[in-house]
Image 1 (spheres, protein in one colour):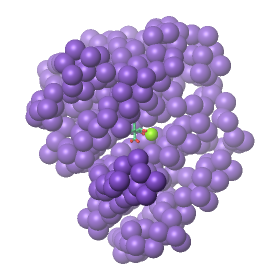
Image 2 (cartoon, protein in one colour):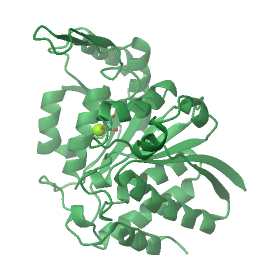
Image 3 (cartoon, helix red, strand yellow):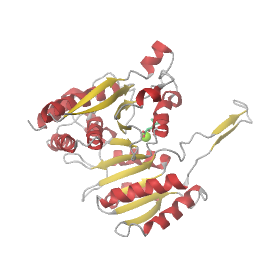
Image 4 (tube, protein in one colour):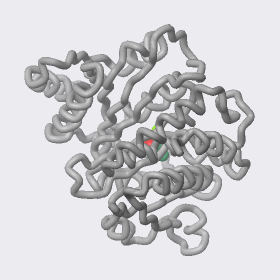
Length: 351
Ligand code: IPM
Ligand code: MG
């Protein structure tokens, strides 16, 4: 039997609730499969941990996470307790330090869900977000803080290596799907970094003649996400644009409660991390009404990554049939509580 070592990192707010639900599904699937075992360790970092220890995470948190095969994250942050840019630092640091440069966020219209846009044909896209540099590269500073003459500088960083590898990742993914890639930039205004993105796309195009690749500016792409989302298959974007477009994609296919994500280090030199696209939602935390689907689907992405394809497929199918049967949490217009939604999904798993 294969063993996979998983760091369970629920974090804050509804992160704790939805991770607990996904763990129920993971437990059920490994019991049924009998071919693999998940050895989990609970990582208690976040705002509660800070209240006890004075730190959001221990200083050697990267070292602690390094030996795991995967990290399964809920969500971080509770702005009522601490500013988000502080509590979220470990998240961005993990993505960057473990070179999880490919953030993969599938957004699909499931049966049983009404799209928030006119959708006569299926919506099925994957956002591939550059996750290691771009606008999230922490370079800048503030001068004369609080003074009327204050200056703040925040610089984005785009490297040829970083852009090339994320585009290649997108092209490869497109080959396994409908062979269409849309690269999102804003090169009509950001004439250094984003023009480099355009030029790199041109150099790669000939290597993937079987994939149709086009380019859109982020403003026009936002409009088309709403107007004709069906045109998108694989969408490759910089760190910030990918972040924004993934929330938009979530809204279009029924809500962020449905969108999973994987932060991948494709070379497998470091552990990859799996988490729902949504955040810690402090406004609904503790009420038992969060939608567990995004996190359960993230657990399927994790199993896929670990090579447990059959188990991953079983989870995805169970989610699809549950939604297809009309079972829904409050965010989807239904009445089910978090654990009831998981109950329905568990019932759909193969015996
Ligand atoms: C996401 C989130 C994070 C991001 C936040 C919480 C820092 O919005 O994963 O999409 O911007 O990457
Ligand atoms: Mg986001």
